[in-house]
Length: 484
Image (cartoon, rainbow, N blue to C red; front, side, top):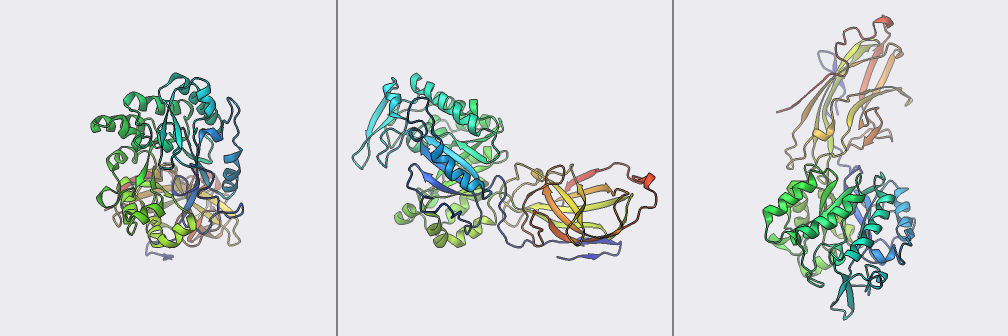
């Protein structure tokens, strides 16, 4: 990284990506703490083990049957998820949920609580390879939908809008909540069923992302792909719906993923979620190969989230090169390719700041953020923060590897007349409109608060405090244009 004045007395810095794996909002790897049972896959981790050695680990997925939460009508017990949730939230992670209504293993005969059947909800039995008979509700039965509505109302009351919740799955249809019934009772699903189950979640989740499984959409529009894409576009346009594909590498080769066209509808507006098959199962069948199809799916789907669908340290040990490659592209990766500012400035006058920003990930930074320069004393005290509210990193598109398109930032700031003269360290950050850093950058020189040192500036004493903004015609004015 250079830090030297150019001939026109500008400091020009060209930061270098240090290869680190920032943990940022709305992206990263997710641990299956529960995977349709209480026995997998985070349960081998002790209460103090927060999987800090897994690079890019950002959120915890809690996937359980409804019966664990509402064992008796109207009596909700969230403790089974609250404990692990609080453990990871304290470590800066977010949480995601799916509550299923039908299982086919672990002897969970009534994933939708048995009292539903006793209350008059219709259902069907099916037998799996273990010889156990499992009960699946009739998914458009009025009694079932009445109690499902009540359950989702309670879940929405607790979780909707909570900043620690990454997303909430539509898990109310199909075996394992996966949106299909081919391995259970074979119940038919059509557009009306899709609208019913997604609509119930929409009713109670207005602020938190709701993830729709691709299999639910495919089941509802099995012979009508154009209708499926139109339906998906309608949900995507609402702003808080996204896609989850949990069938990556269930098969190998060219069939390793099958819903990339649906992803194209969602990824421009919301973070797409990918889940691979259980790593050990896929590997044993020979479908996993070198895992490159997971990486390929991430690229094609423009995915923001990927799943650790196995015992996490075994997966990390055996797939570390794949994980490292995916971490360089998963979600967004923001970089200031170049930043310049005056080597010297006078308090009470205007300065010009220019930068070139790029997103080297596959997806946008959906939450957005504003670049800021912070001036700090050599001892670390914050003197001044200059925020460019007119430039939003949400506008930086993800793109193919090695082809990130940069966007130019030009901003004019007034230095307050009361800034004491002296030499200050210049730090760059991305965050809120008031300059609070929020997004980690893959840069050296961080101050522990997501600010990164770029260089320095010499501030001279103000000549005329009354003329604070002399020469500043439009404070904060900015011009954005793509750079070739």
